[in-house]
Image 1 (cartoon, rainbow, N blue to C red):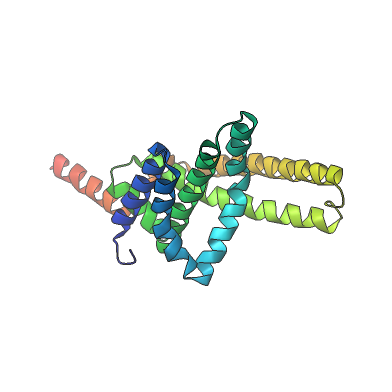
Image 2 (cartoon, one colour):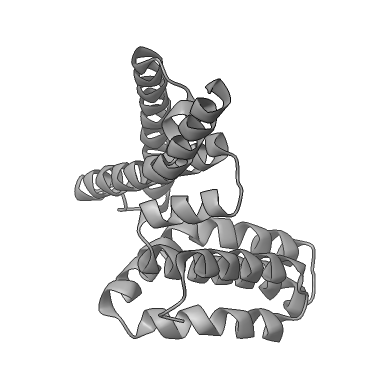
Length: 209
């Protein structure tokens, strides 16, 4: 899997995540996640990246598990939602570890996705990384002030950290929107890759002649 082209890696990741969403047998879901897991655990940096992402999406995996458990569903149905989230994180981590952001954007353009959508995905990735850093800073500051000394203070700390992240998200989105307006360009203009822009310019010149 290490010598796959960027487009092939992207297609493999999308196909695996779609398959995981459609599958109902937990062993099949685990089997799909085995390939990226083997590729990640062999690298110390990959293990750290995977651990951070699993910690970040842990609430997302636990919510459907809790809902199924409260509904007295069988163990098979309880484990399936969490497995889907974990396997999706495995594949996305493998993709982002193997490819740089520019390579992923070029592969998305090569698959025919609209330029504004590719730009939106790129902005979301950068925004998510900044929010993750904000979450870590706010949580560390709260824990150093004794925010985990009891159950009540832990809940209060979690609410305060969530509020900090929410406010920072609104503030950052407003700054990005103002910066885009001041530059006078929309997603379509800023997201078009260089080779597409050159091809478009060539077609316009040929039409003018």
